[in-house]
Length: 236
Image (cartoon, rainbow, N blue to C red; front, top):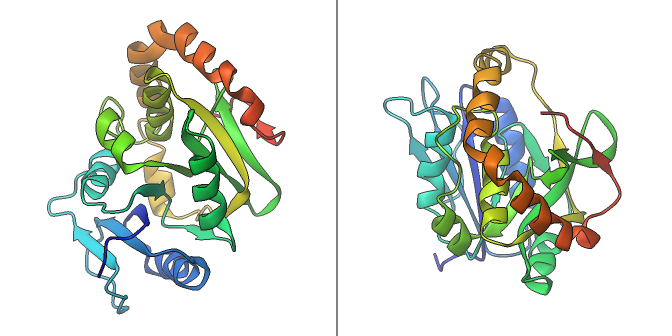
């Protein structure tokens, strides 16, 4: 298989049905050459057979969210990388809209895809008055340079840490209204388990990045005109 244009990355843990839905949506709705790189911490392999461009990286032992995603990022081959949750579903046009936006705006380092959970509208979110990307796209070259997700957090704030690292490179964050994701937000034992340590993650993240907030906000404001209107503020 030739190197893909787009690498999609996710982690998964004992969620075969949501994961299968994600894979099927990628197969049906991705129009550029792609690969899906998966860090799989499940107790046993999923039984579904996947195409060869779905690459499963078993976590043995379990690495945790941030380390698992970073392991998958390191294996990507595409020029562009989109990170997703295993309970997400990509919608038609997401790939071309995301890539076109990033190629048209080299001053943007991170593109935020719009998403909806159960109800409309599609939204993006902010933290400390700056958009971050629950589901985002950036170049593999930039991701490798900044080190992807910061290991200062266990799970929560991993997407914030990517945004902060991009801004510290002097690159902006934009939103891509044509690139949309359904986030089914599975309310299962894994989600409940993930709530543990959320406050500590937030504290650790801000202990490291708080001194840089003025600079990051200045960088963000320079390209804020490339952000769309649908924003849910301060939801971390």
